[in-house]
Length: 261
Image (tube, rainbow, N blue to C red; front, side, top):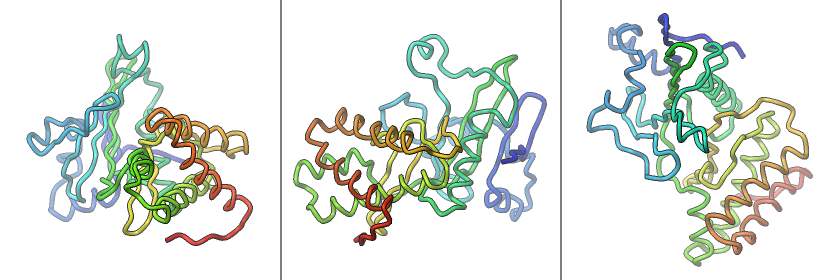
């Protein structure tokens, strides 16, 4: 998929969703005046930028935009490298930047009908041979992570029928993603957000995802990653909930219909 920056300068480029562009142009403003790396900094939004939780790498904020509430995420390194270099990545070109790649995959999946956040903006900013990057996506409102859903189920705060509905919705989204040819690099229980009106499971965080023909082995790798995540976050008893997700995934794989609540 071709990726072309909306606004570009010598050392930076930004990619903006057409709806956001239209909202700016309708106000008589220019894209060049409104879109720059500045909008990918929480300081641009002042007090309106609210940090998302305290987990992970702690580099995401809720922000307002002209097209609705959104999430700003700055790319951060983890592991040993992250202790010495938190935010700089080797720059090989705009189209190869992880932010532009993730924007492209999200756009493809959303247009194909998968429940994912809308990619609103992506940015890279060069510093010599390296760059820093950020992504803005639409906010999935009134949702809970799959980890929270599983905890509610295990604590009996969620009945069997609702738990089955969430498991089925999760399986449906994962299977649809695979059939669309996308392999998720980190399908953990925090990267699936569930809403109940309508019942839907949104998949988020497509950093390092790949558009490929997803093999049966790769499908199982994604499901195994999700199972390990649930066990880590919710305990061994979460296997019962994961078994439901796997059951519904297999029903879909075998073209056996079932009803979502």
